[in-house]
Image 1 (spheres, rainbow, N blue to C red):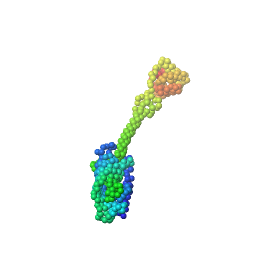
Image 2 (image 1 turned 120 degrees about the horizontal axis):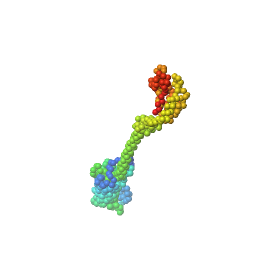
Image 3 (image 1 turned 90 degrees about the vertical axis):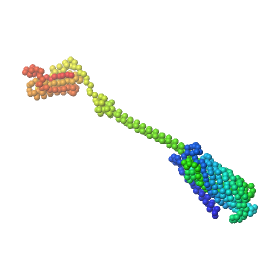
Image 4 (image 1 turned 60 degrees about the vertical axis):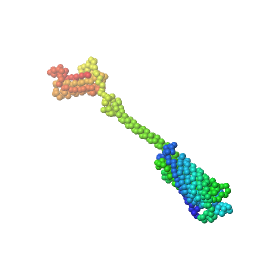
Length: 451
């Protein structure tokens, strides 16, 4: 019953360990710099020394089945410790020490021995072993949760054996002297990281003794061996700020190096993009301001910002302020022939008596005046006058009407109305006496002034 409970306990421990092996932190895109050491750094950046203590069960039963002098193994307590120097991530050397008891009952060859049980006291066993870490690298995680390992080495142990004729007896029937023998320890195990610099050490070790007297029987040519299954704690020595070399994941350091460089490059690209966006916004603002400053809504060639006369009609000639230019003044030269045409019109001009109606006799000479105004763009002033016959008001109105009548006739023939001025002066500006009929005839007139 006792043996079954112990085996069940070991099986449960194996299940727990196996579940922990796969319960690791999944990789992500965050940069976790915990235990980060720059790749290819020297050993001074790590904790390379450690010590460990362990205890467990010793048994003559091993996984390497073969010649066994006793059929029934009895598990007994063993304990020990070690000091280790980690040289590489996956390789270290450790000095081991352990002691304990190995016991077995029911001899396989009862016909050659009267003893039913043996008990061997291992007073001390010391060896130097190589510790090979198999999996401290994990491509998917920042830091491995555990490290399976193998050990192999060689050393010397001192032990004494007691033999019992009755398996239940506590008094030995025979006792051997102390033996000093060389042995080869071969082991495997797992180290589970509990905290920075603290590891749970679970191991199984088979010790090959280079003799056949461990169990008190020396039969045949096969050497004895025994196993030691143990659990313990390992403590890294040195500064807590440094990671333990044996548990450090160098791939994660390379990953951090790569991701840091990538992040720096991305930050530079983001900064450059932000700078490009700023420059683009500045350029857009500049272009917008430039478009506003160079806008010419009415198309007159003067920018709106300087245009004091907006919305000028298309084709209008403007000055530097966008205002229409004054019509060019053409200097007019009145020739003698022009004067003759006007003088002839004045001489032939007749109205109905007391009216502003022009008589047909005057049309030919007025037509020539209209043609002159159209061709040469002359300006013309018409001044109407009367004699003193009748009231002043009537004479003023008649003189004005006659001047307007002439203007209307000339405009009908194509003359520019804006360039003809018609004014009536009545009897106020006589050029002869009104006392005689001849004088009054001279005063009844319309003067043409061409310019």
